[in-house]
Image (cartoon, rainbow, N blue to C red; front, side):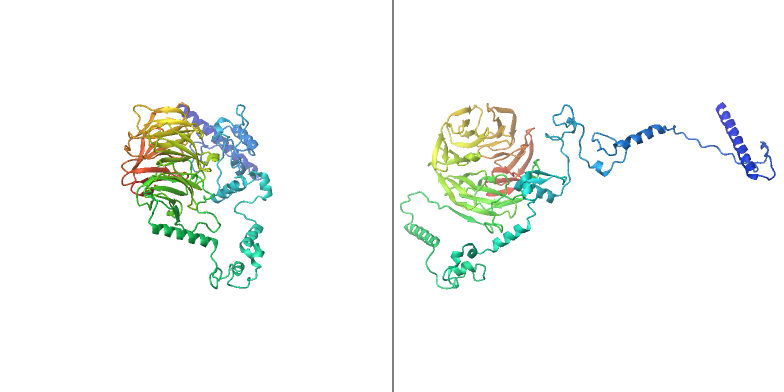
Amino acid sequence: MDLLQSYGDKSDEEDGEESRRKGGEEKGKGGGETEVEAAPASPDSDSSSSPPRLLPAKSAAPRVDDTALALAAAGTARFLHRPIDPAQHAVAFNPTYDQLWAPIHGPAHPFAKDGVPQGMRNHKLGFVEDASIEPFLFDEQYNTFHKYGYAADPSGIDYVGDLDTLQRNQALSVYNIPQQEQKRRRLQMKATPAEEDPAAAAGPDVENPASEEWILKNRNSPWAGKKEGVQGELTEEQKKYAEEHAAKKAEKERGGEGRGDRVEQVDKSTFHGKEERDYQGRSWIAPPKDAKAANDHCYIPKRWVHTWSGHTKGVAAIRFFPKHGRHLLSAGMDSKVKIWDVFNTGKCMRTYMGHSKAVRDICFSNDGTKFLSAGYDKNIKYWDTETGKVISTFSTGKIPYVVKLNPDEDKQNILLAGMSDKKIVQWDMNSGEITQEYDQHLGAVNTITFVDNNRRFVTSSDDKSLRVWEFGIPVVIKYISEPHMHSMPSIALHPNSNWLAAQSLDNQILIYGTKERFQLNKKKRFAGHIVAGYACQVNFSPDGRFVMSGDGEGKCWFWDWKSCKVFRTLKCHEGVCIGCVWHPLEQSKVATCGWDGMIKYW
């Protein structure tokens, strides 16, 4: 109550002072007029005659110290030109556009070699900033760098790479062909053979439409190629064809005399595509120039995308074209090898017919221009992928179960073949001679896998053992055979080259290290599928996160590499799913093949 009383007394005093002040002002304004002295209002006087009593405004908020705000405002003025510190959680001023987009950099860290503190490092070379860039511009700079060796920095200010070539090409990109170059190409296309070889066009019959000279000169005329007059002498090519045809006919009439029981298979190939070369003269097997991995993270496929059907019997093996996977090669039990288009039409591009019995195994060279095929007719054939011609044929009189080329670029002429007579035979394909024989196994050889930078290779056999060899030396350096081991008809190398996955016929996949001891990793074992009696292929995803394998019931199994748990199972084929391979670039796509003659894309 005392507080309320004091509050009331205080307000009365303030009101009295205010009224006195107003009276003094009115008095000053009156000047010479009659002075009227305002008597203090008594408490019992009329309320209408006294001025209203107004209470002063009261605020419950605490008093604010303006000094701190003024100091903060003065402090921010010094930082207006500096970039924003990325470790800062609050910004006390409105930054400019230049400050927001300035590159991240900070004071050199005393303990970091390159001056970047550990907290700001998101890459082994330092800090990498995200940059927003259009896909077309990125592809332009990507292809320019791979063709010329230089590219524009994402900031657009500077160039990186071979600056000498940049200066020589005047900062040209692959999509900006200069005008003089376009003109030169047009003239080159228009140039006729008559201009290229004037001696050929200056013959005496250059005016005669029935002559070769006239056709060469008027190559682009509507009548080009339609020679008037009677056909003269046969060309060398026509003579050769006629002789071959006559020889085949004579052989057919003889009914195969003198050949005994051996069936002679003629090597031939059929091209099924539209054209072998496109409008720019590129081969049908040429890789797309912008082929690159979409991402470095693999996912398990969920649905069936496409089916390639063309083999009349089961498919024994499939292989993707090296590096870009634009085509898929398949070995059929109908004695044919087929190559299929993956990206565009999804149809068969070429059929290779050279074996008289089922094809067991196939293997691409590093660049994919050639491949090997091994058949039950005891022959190994070396094919040209593009033309379909057989370059050479190798045979020891025994059935080859597996063929492999040495993966080293300088040893692409070395062929290894695991035979049914327990030997691994090494050929030099340039000379066609056997250069080495590795003869230690006690059963037919099933797999050959190169390890340790291709200095060694591991072989598995029907004798239920693994043997490790030094390349070129026919002495076993490691022999792995345990009483509990079963035969291992398929082995795959992990992408990091440290582990081998071996398909064991007791329905499990075992993991062996590729270091000196080649020890069994007892912590990793993948099981659940039924493969007893079938040589189902085992494989890894390109990032090494998943293991996959076919099984005897037509399923494709996927396991997680770290946890060894089954990730997913797909029902792929009627009958055995014998082969499965992961696409090298499109990293959530898988191809499977089975004994039902189908190849499926998932």
